[in-house]
Length: 333
Image (cartoon, rainbow, N blue to C red; front, side, top):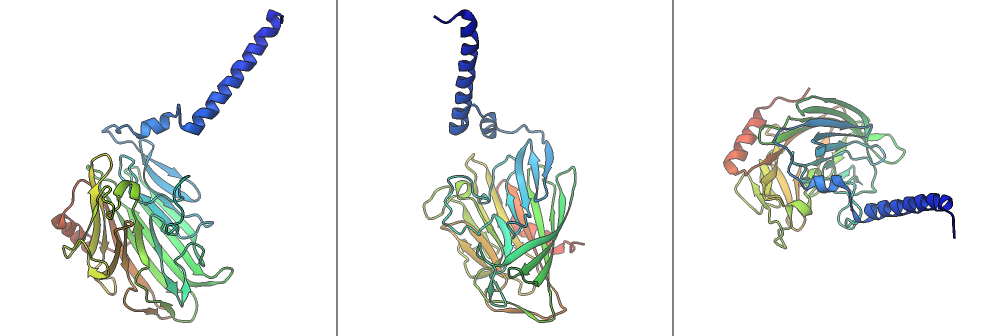
């Protein structure tokens, strides 16, 4: 029989093996992970904003949960924003997709993003098409939760000089007392060479948002039935012109919320023609919906949009007021 001196280290070794096995099992099945449990709990009424910033992203957090995140990774291209509510509810489709998420459905739909469908006949829309690269990024964030993000973006074929350069300024307001905030998106496009540039006609392309089906549902199946609404009072406005369009509903925790997109009256071709999809929640003010747009060499094209992320219900009257406020807002410097 082993001596007591030999049994003591053996028992310690076995205890260590069991502990490691349990820890591995917990990680596999989600046991003992307080972060997952905490994510289900209501946040304290007192806000605790903080910033998470890396070389490739910046995010506003409330008690450690993401309110929104801007991603500008050159390895990915096509900068995009994940947006949500101050309680951590994510309203846009997650990107990159989490484990187990279906990857067959429009993988290039990255939350809130910009992509021309085609420039000079070259497809820039789909995932594996030519580059839309953030060349320079400058971020200034504030303690109240507001931020200014400036980007220089190059549109180019692989290993080729750019066709178009873009100067993009995104300003995000501090969330108000109800948690509502807005994102002002200003983009100025300039041909990079001595030739005119043509943004080709297509029913979709430009500013776009893909909502999270898990949060905002699917109108075809009746799950979490959010609804579309535009400035003309229509719930079905695909290929219709409007000053603004919105997607409104109730989150899984029972709170009314929504996202509205506003087309600025100084934009050429205002009011925009809109694309909407109910079978996958998607909105897009398509600048080139009806015809090409030729940008002469040496000239510029500036487009401005506002995205309103609101907690609480919103109707046509409130969204009209919000659009009027945006229409009076000065251009970004």
